[in-house]
Image (cartoon, rainbow, N blue to C red; front, side, top):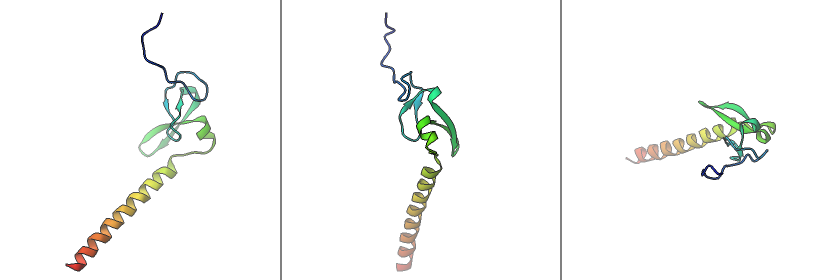
Length: 86
């Protein structure tokens, strides 16, 4: 007998049913093949491969913050330039 459910996503590391994606590499992992890490305001799951490699979410958050600051600085520079021409 079948339950009529859809296909089950499998863990990329062990083949069991997956709980969700790794926050770093986006591979599907089960609860036994991931470690929880805190980053920003939430807790994320990293697969064991990314966790052993020392992958953390600190660097991507830093790059996003710097990117947003660069955009803000550009908008401010354009605004100051337009104000100077007035």
